[in-house]
Length: 382
Ligand SMILES: *Cc1c(COP(=O)(O)O)cnc(C)c1O
Image (cartoon, rainbow, N blue to C red; front, side, top):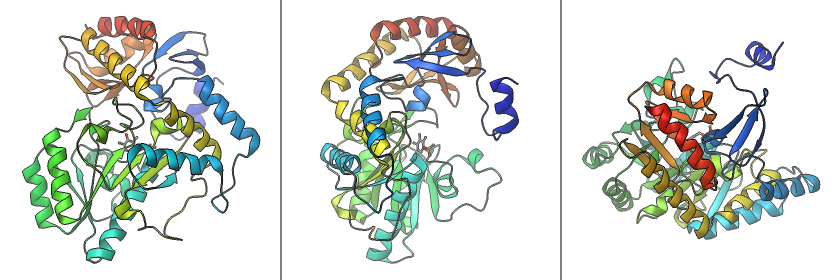
């Protein structure tokens, strides 16, 4: 049987995979089992921030792998401590809980908001407000947070206590705060899975102000937007806000599973001994890779992200392009699936988000490879 046939027979049928078996990669390029070369502008959905088989990342990971691969959280390890220090220093947040995925990072944020509000205002202040069209994960609680009915499917009842309100509608948001006993609000600065939709400055600043006035935790889901993706280390840094909680995952690990929930001084002590935990959380190999990623996201790298964004936008003049940095959505006239197939057949891997083509290229994709990929995309869009 071929790998495709074995996979189809034995792997749970939750994924509609593209007909490509990736066997090897280097930087922004990868090769399939037939030896066909692709330029990958999807990076495993925004995960491999520096592309495939990045040498500095590999060196950090393999050094740690050869020393200690896992300890559990009963012991201290250097990569976990150093990564937490780097994240706090670079964001102004105070403490980090490490998980293994984006959904888990958000679960932690929700627990922080619930306990913070329960202690300060009483357990009835437990509502978490999220936005329509948002995506926060696939666990039953993060599905409840996700403001897209079609993901909820036949999995009801989901965790109670979640309210969805329209993005960029401050009056509606204010009304929700007036009508419910709200513990926290969780939002993406650019809604990724929802179609690469940007929140307006006015809406983000307005939410921040209302939350501060009512001591409601302002929580930013940076699972996709984080780690340099939008041209800042974290997307909230584009706005004049100081979030109480920031969650991240995807690009942080550079390809290994890790999630992080960062907490500000205000709520850093909410979770105490025994309140939360994860066997794998803070795994030293994942943290060593993540530390390498974070250390390399400096001003030079971030300027490079903005330069590449400008180049892509210039190549796509005439099309509506949403998003920020190297998290971009392209409105198509043809059905998006046709564009993706045409790109793939011509050796370029791109993603979709709702009806848009979504690009999440490596943050350091060489300009000549990006140019080559854009030639293909421009052709495929016609
Ligand atoms: C991908 C994503 C998640 C879920 O992350 P997993 O690692 O798949 O659990 C949560 N929030 C946002 C914004 C995402 O893009």
